[in-house]
Length: 577
Figure 1 (cartoon, rainbow, N blue to C red):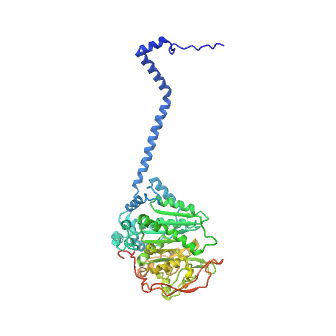
Figure 2: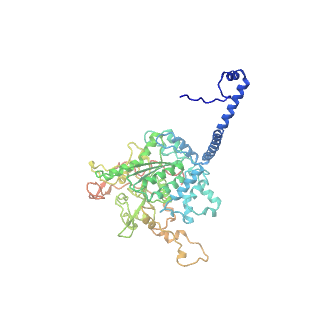
Figure 3: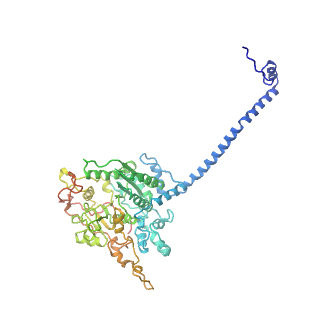
């Protein structure tokens, strides 16, 4: 079978004559090449056009993203905060955070509106003007920003505490007098970084603490889904006042069966987006059947304090105050009052007063009487406010909402002087030494005893601060202020205005949250030596009883009789007050 050959056109036939013609004529070679190029362009032109259009669109989109990211430079949390983040970005144990863009900041604030406190939302929203004036003047030394730093300066920071505009109706000169205070102008020479607890502090620690008082918040959480929005809303607010660069938050959560871990991840992202330093550590560990309750709780509390030592060892950063918080519902000004009193009195440990609802009595009662002890060593009572203290002097001050010296307390929130925590050997949470016959008290009672043994025995309770663990008790201990003139059916026609200090609502124990401050609340406490014996009701945990399981005893306090525990060894007070 013979295959017929396909004819070849004369223009492309590879015969010898054509080959000779093209090789002999350069012009014909150029004509053929140009024709081939034009044909190639006609075929490939759509693809090239699409490529060019894609490149142009990509360049435009890239420039758009670049212009959005440049807005992050407008955000100014403060010079110290920027330096702090630049410093910690090189550390392996801290996550690097970038400054947010404008759109990201708007998104953060949108999230914050859904995470605002539910139970504590009305704490200071409708506070009376006289109380707002007192708060502005009282807590001004706690503001961690210099005059003019941030929008509105100090007045703007404190003004965000409360709604209302009392400052608009005040004389401008009075406002300047209040917020132009020299108290924070010069750093104190007795700051913790200057103490020689271990033979001297590093120069780096001195540099990091010279710009303001450093606060370390330690928080333990367990099945705390309901109170986390209130707790962390308060954390963000108080950090904005104390200064983000002055605040570090350590959260340790373990064994929760609700959505506590999910909320913690959200809070971690929100906190870092606004420049707040936070470390959140979660664990699946729970107390086993063979673990001693006090030993387990001591380990959990020490886990929340672990970054305190890590920051000092890794970076030389030390803190001036430690605020330890349980799963309570704190109002912003309650937390600030505890910090203020701790620094004002130079106290080793400062506590509030926590309450729970008593079903049989139908009213709130004092809660943490397993830890709290009076200056005579007696235990406080699980009773209404009239019968909490037994010592006449303590009971008199308690009824008038005045700070009270105690032998030990915890009560939901405790502000600690960190000096004993930095000592060698360091004071830490522990269980009792049963081998040596020590009473198996709470880990919080034992750390109060250890603070006294270290010479930091200035322990006090701020009775004004009433803490709750649920909405029911919170509402009962913080009733809303009412207009008595309207309630009684009267209409004011003239005369002098009502005297806020004479309001009968302020004289009641469970009165409005905006109770006016008395001058006695700012006076220094005359601390006395501790009692020789303390009432102890141990919990050895050998049985199934969920509470103290041994006979109570009067245990002697083993302290050095030559050491004055009331002496101020670490001055954390204000420069002028």
